[in-house]
Length: 229
Image (cartoon, one colour):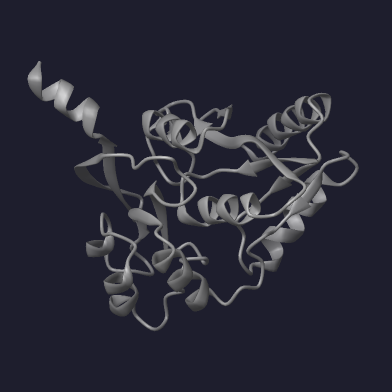
């Protein structure tokens, strides 16, 4: 069996990669690997709360490998901490790390370079699938996600907080990749065939940070608890 970690951002692409890999024989998914902004206790880039991340791992029935990152974080510090992860991975007989990258060659080249000589194979199960086809397959396959971060330089801020569904795909401008692969948007998955149960989310405030529009979601149970207090 090939033991694989999934590079996990909390979004749709890594979740779909998990789903596809689970359908392959000879593969054991060993865990979800996530970088965390230590200052805010959220997934780096996506802004997903750690509580939601932990609920995702529980619903996927997988251990969570958290990599805390300082904020701000230099590229040198990021690479140092990821090198430590690779050492741990090899000590735990991890054979590969799977990424949800779709077509950006420079991103793939960087990942391959970082894993070179570590003994860990980079895998790209979604690579070169046409993104319109991929987006439709995700939605028809039962994946449910919210847009949690929108780059307002590329996409109207009103898209923040929307469901990743067929209506969203119809409303996206022609210049926007259907999967947001060029950073137009990021998502947070709350249900799908990779989970044993859905994750109930409650919407919070919409925040603009340096041109990135974040739709803050929290676990519904946490929201209800806060209201009762």
